[in-house]
Image 1 (cartoon, rainbow, N blue to C red):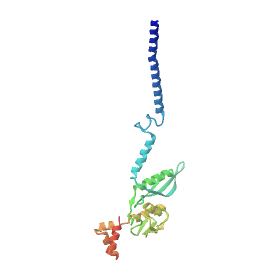
Image 2: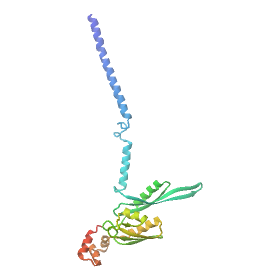
Image 3: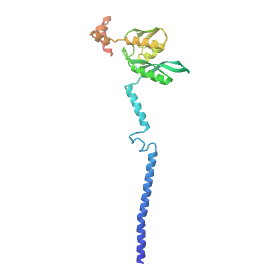
Image 4: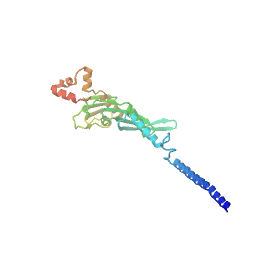
Length: 250
């Protein structure tokens, strides 16, 4: 009887490790399946943000950041002036494309224009915008709202006259010229276009007039004088000249 009891006890003790092993094996299998399930998900550790390659979303953020660096971190005003459909006759018929004229400015005295051609309109606008950003020029503004003096510009058959205006006048300009002054940041100006209505020639004539603009500060530096000396030559008192000179920022 004692031997039979020992045999039964040994059987039970031997079976206990086996059951424990089976339970542990079952847990291991469940953990493996759970890990595989996490890896298959779009946000899993195997394919998500912890991986060196990164997810698709992070790539888009990097490209967006690089675009901001190219523009210098400033917001530019882009205005589409004209779109023209062009065609090229080839052996098999005609190939149609589009030409875009775009004006770009920062609203603080810098402006530029560009021209681009492509088979599709969005691509043509993109090319013209990139070209305009490369050819931006700085124009001195009086009180940040108007031009310092009157000017004339000419390109081909296009002629333009630009005049400074008092506060509240607004932008009196038509067509392509208005887009230039709005992008430049001018709030008061009077203009007149004479001759051609070709937008390309009008834009170039306008830029010819803007490039010739000078400020009292630049003239004083070039002549080796003070700004108050230049402003006081028109019969103004010394105090008025000095006050006006102090108000000039560029």
